[in-house]
Image (cartoon, rainbow, N blue to C red; front, side, top):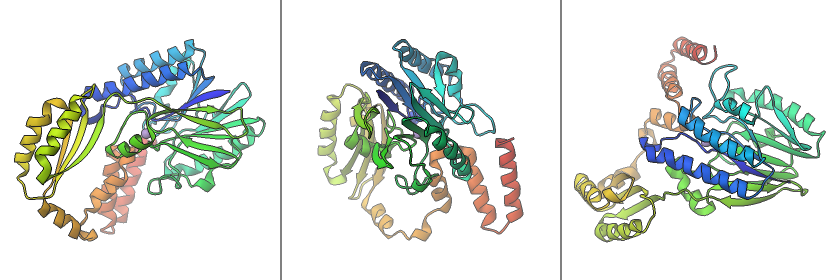
Length: 378
Ligand SMILES: [Mn+2]
């Protein structure tokens, strides 16, 4: 019995405000679905962040439903859990996945925490933020008990686990019940396969590059989905790569080599099928930023879909090296650490709490929290 495990497709994500990037995310998802059908699997598990937003556009929903119908025609059931991006932060709110239930999508939700597919237990719980971890721990007790009745057991989650992302986790590895064969996880955008209990714990990663810092893992481990053979004692995982159609280039150029490096880059880019995204940093030496910027635009502007330049002349590199930690902006650090939520309301909440609490205004802080929770969890 084989199934496909996929996650973090972020359909509808218009990266850098570019409609071509939104199309890229659809394109790679469609090709993942084609490949899943080609591989003749029995079912699919989607571990959350199917959509980039809790309110996807009609176009995004339509594209997903077309792909879901392709799978349905091929007799492939789809089981899905909501992630942090496609979760509505209100009590009892339903994730957008629910709109595809009548088209056959099997939603794993607090109301239906598990499904049985030909004697395989497929259970899980939607994304919970750290303060709501107790919901997960409670759900795990029930799931772990119910799962015992079946020989093959899959747990589907969209969470960060301390072992894999030590700075932004909701769960510690010790919180996770040990009696499952396969832990189908989402949320971490890089690809991870680990032994856990007597089974395997796996993140298939995102299907496209959502952030610049995913490029390294993409180059090393590829992008796509996993094909899992659950009929063995320990599941066998095969990495299936589905290449995003556009290159995401990260290039550092030393200023003294500017001309040579630009012309090398130009040659390379001309050989690509699609215009790439280019993150380019010019560093070292003493140069005039606007002049270098102009040159980059002249030489490369028409060849790329989007250029994201950064300039670090020697004078700046020196100050960065000597920068004292205390000169870092705490608000920026705070907002950075909250980037996974991708939610301005949460950023603002954190900043106003920081402002008030650092001045010992605890009552004001309490009022702010109360107001926030009333708005979000009425
Ligand atoms: Mn995600």
